[in-house]
Length: 298
Image (cartoon, rainbow, N blue to C red):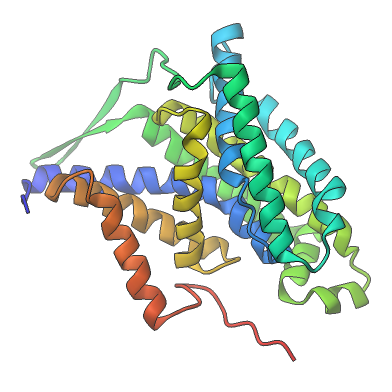
């Protein structure tokens, strides 16, 4: 194990937190959908890559900045999410196993479509500010932070704050939270559960669309990248607690920091293993995750 200097270690910690914020945005929709529908959307990673490809296409074809591409991708994936839920998922009521198989099939279909449209070459968006860094002097320490990750972190936190405000202050948010707590009781109180599920799935796709725009600026991707990223996002929501947005944020920040620190103290090959080891140990002692709750059914 190689121990870096204090300056490098602090910089790595900060970059890890910035990366974790982007992870949280990418995983928020997945945990929200699970909270309402109690199903795992295996296609979530494929929709992330799909939205990244759309941002890439809008940038290369029309010069639209990736941060502005959310004006197109967010409404588009929101509508796609509602369509998928209404036409496919709603037909498999109370069959979570079949839903997992369906979303897995959808992920493979999307991979094939993306491969046909953009081939298997790795893509990423390179703008005038992609390689720029912000210099921040803190006592004797000089931090050099990538502009893309700083802005991406701020955008991710803003998007998560808006989502949290929607869930806490709006009638739709109260209906979503009621459905998360007890679907049957919510239905008896007059909540249109099928509508809530459709809108929630749309919101999950909308958040992953926002994450996809940031994703396209930070990482290289191709049609098959969704396999790696769905495993990361699933790990985040499991560690944070299935259905918990605050838990997903905390777990995502942990993943970002652990990966960054392990990469400089060990190797980049070992760094992902460290996070999964933390996940494994946590679930032994707290199976419901950091902020999850044990669901009791009578």
